[in-house]
Image 1 (cartoon, rainbow, N blue to C red):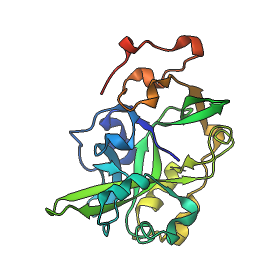
Image 2: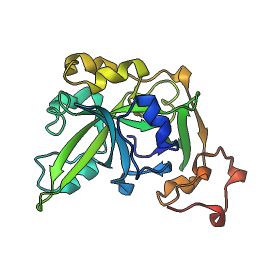
Image 3: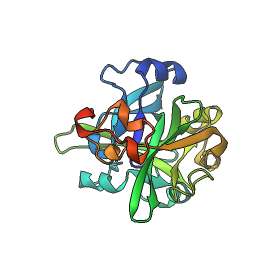
Image 4: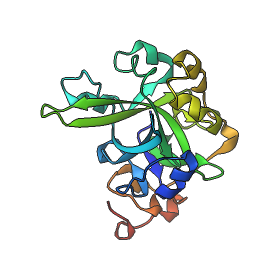
Length: 237
């Protein structure tokens, strides 16, 4: 699964990168994003006026759900079974989205230990993860927009670390994924392959990322066992 991501860039960077039509005043760079830190996670959608970025809740709540806590189990969606799942099958042709990020965390097993790693593109530029989104209404009528990140089989870099990885879209494929009016899911489905390991890299990071309350630049810094930061040096949300 993919349960932690980073978005350490400024909004101006992704506005240019994705040619977004509106600002997002409430956006702030993040170094340790978890579902429990929702609903302030940037998500790119295509609307009639163009591409725009919205802050959404991580953990898709289907529009038909009676209990919003169902979203806790839907932070990820397997690419292989999207058309078969009640929560996703109607969204693949109507509400596809991109989650901008510049890295994600996974935990490598070493005996009884789990070593956190930050995984990113060698270029260190922002990338787009494929996702689906939906709108759920509270009993008082207020809207809750939420999303899920699509996962696929791991590439060669990720295989020793985890058995899944988020779908990272090639920049050339992003428009096809977003534009549901022109690209049917039968075609867009072919975009959900593992990203090239030759373009990615990873390094060990501090165990402070185990807790989502830590959200500072030290979260992504490479460390060794003798190089762990002290608690007093950590940045809190």
